[in-house]
Image (cartoon, rainbow, N blue to C red; front, side, top):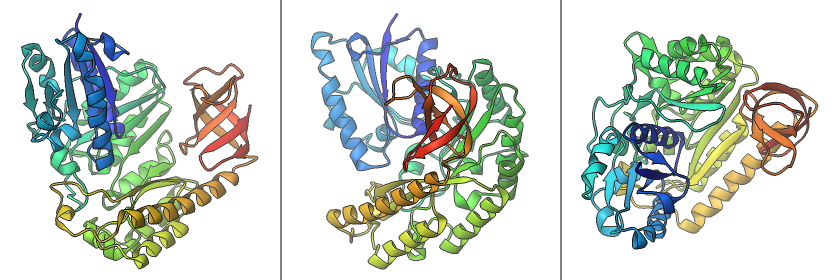
Amino acid sequence: MPSVYLETYGCQMNLADSELIVGQLARAGYDRVPDPAAADVILINTCAIREHAEERVLGRVGDLARHKLRRPHVQIGLAGCMAQHMRDRLLGEASQLDFVVGPDSYRRLPVLLAGGDPFVDVRLERDETYADLSPLREDGVRAWITVMRGCDKFCTFCIVPYVRGRERSLAADAVIAQVEAAANAGYREVVFLGQTVNAYRDRDVDFGRLLRRAAGVDGIARIRFTSPHPSDMSEPVIEALATGGKICPQLHLPLQSGSDRVLARMERGYGVDDYLTLVERLRAAVPGIALSSDIIVGFPGESDDDLEATLELMRAVRFDNAFMFKYSRREHTKAAKWEETVSEDEKGRRLQAVIALQERVAAEINAALVGQEVEVLVEGPARRRAAWLAGKTPQFKTTVFPDQGAAPGELVHVRVTETTAHTLVASG
């Protein structure tokens, strides 16, 4: 059997795509191996959201190229968003590459590889959803299910619509079939994925209705989704969060900036008051909901006052968690044509201010849980404590506790004894 080695960089969408790729190659007779030294095909599934990620991947390609020295037949390739973004430059800048395949070309990958010649296949397909292809998932308790692909928002800083194409939703019946397959395979939690996942629609099935249908599948204990767009957070979705039972009280709600002026330049489609009103609606409907977010600092034109507005909004909302980044210029986006007005040093200073605030708030939120009992979906051994287990609460908080025989996939109740900004420590 030919063999493939696969590395994945980026978000949950990339993880789900990697499972799709492995499934497609397995049906063509490929065996996945854990060591690139044993592989006939070495594939890196990539992210293009930030420049640093691309630099890291190019360095990794150079490192993996050593496997071609003794085995010249080995094919090395890039898949995913970076492949789509840098398609015109990759084969020139990374001469070790044999092929480049975009996010809508995975169906054709086995045939293209069989040809043996270098190739670039980055055609975006308006209707490709891979709804008829089954992923080959890794062992665990959580299954990723991509319910829609692409994005129609065209925020001025974001490359996603250019590398993943326009929005298209999987048929609702195909989504539910994947949920049922995951349950039958022993997965206890499913996570619905999409760049703007709450914009999902299949005829009369909107995202709220899809969540309710999924909640009716036996064997699934929890349902999550990411990443919704604030402008598409409809009343049916909020109602599903409030009354759906299995739908977890946790939401990633990307903000990007707390300044109306910056949000307008980003073309996010909402203002600060809109966002705060949405947060109020969510917390009223789902008491105890955990909110996380994305924050960008150093966007072109961002002033000290804009940064302070972001910090002020963070103080008001009090996110449980946040992913915080320096602005990274992306080719083809509208903002790429604008002058960068914030130096790298200043971006770093602003990022540290945002991180320091978020760490303090997260630590305070978690500290308030000491003494409370929480439900944990067991995932497996804790990384840093021997004879301890780790898992997630419904609010997606990592929790570690002494191993008393619970198996992965079980729901257990433990009492929080101490906390950090990122972890709950509990007793059995």
